Amino acid sequence: MISSLYIFMKSIRFTASKFQKFLALFWCFAWSVFYALTVSSIPFLLFRVILCTANIIFAFLLIQRGFGEQQKLKKKQIFEITVSAYLFAFGISYILNYIAGLLVSVPYALFMQNDIVAGNPINYNQPIYLLLRFLTLILQLTLAFLIFRVRRLRKGFPFIFSRFTIVAALLFSGIILIIVSWVNLLSKSENIYRGYNMDIAGLIIAGVGIYILIRRLMKIYQLKRVRQNSDDHYERLWIEEKEKNERLCEASNAMHTALHKFTSRIDAMEAALENGVVSAVDIQNLQKDWQNELSAIKGIKPLKSTNITALDNLFAYFAKQFMKREICFNLVINGSIIYMTENIIDRGRLETLIADHLKDAQIAVDSSPNPYRGIMAVLGLSGEHYEFTVFDSGIPFEVDTLERLGTQRVTTHENEGGSGIGFMTTFETMNECKASLIISEKEPNTADYTKSVTIRFDGKKQYIIETYRPDEFTSSDRYIIINSD
Image (cartoon, rainbow, N blue to C red; front, top):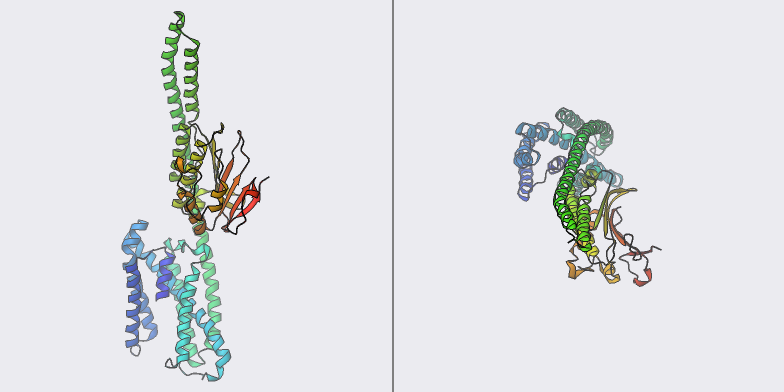
């Protein structure tokens, strides 16, 4: 029961509260006590049907409110999903139980087969059989847990939410129960452990059926997602075109405003010129103001979209901040950022990562005397891995700062607003997502970016410093020094 309820909740991605988990455990314990008291009066096959029905009702009541609010579903839809998911979990749980029993019983049968008497029921009063049963149950729960450690199954079984799944789940669990009952009846007439030979055949048949079923259901689900993504794609294109038009209108309005503003000043300048009261300084000031106005208008340019509104708004915010500080900003997007946030890094963590490093780059550029003031952000797929990189033309990192990154809060520009929290958060993200941090620095120049910070999601959790001054760093196991020359 514990195994089937666990698989059920994981398959629909339902996060139970502590109270709900306690309630589920108490429910399983209560039914175990009930069966122990009535084992002689209720046939096990009938009891299994009663138990399965009761568990479906219990699971529905357990998830009804929270799951309905999360998924925006009606009660009827939630009940259909509950029936499908629980029957599917019930069948998988039985398969895991027999796999665990097989793994535990084979070593026992090999070393203690002389103690087995064919046809005799198992006497659980003997410690060895009680131990074998206990090990079987522990292994079953472990296998249930490991299923959802597989990368493709971490987000449950999405096909469960399809309406026709209830039919497939009924068929699937029915076949499993028939196989289980067949094996139980067979094992009573012969050696209990010899019955596991039949289990292997049953598991192979059920396994092939499950593989075909899941493969077809996933294929249907993927085709559905492709159609949905196609619709989303055209909707995003429409939104992008709309945003481009809005920005063009914004730039056009800004140009009209500038022309209106300077037309009056030019007319006044011409009148003053006729009277001979205009100096060269007045003309230069007017020219400078006009150039600044045009520069501001040119700064209003569309950024490439990530197709995620929150990220687009974040980049747009920093673009405006950089424009106010006369910092040239470029944004490069590669690959699907939606895929990145669904499979590589949580969207909230990615937003924090972007904000922290763009803010650091801004402070570095503001603190630098470099006449070239530029920042570039690159987000998405690079080679085989997704990554986020920020280039800037700001002041370089101090050697001591780079050596201590990740061990404590350190910053090169504390007086300008740097706190060091950003890199501490970055190292937390590295540990969570198994990403690598690559900091690359060039010799200072006045025409290009001087350094870059890259968070690469490659599963290696390395800290790499590519530098033109490798001799200034002390050797350490925490980081890898690479000569960039």
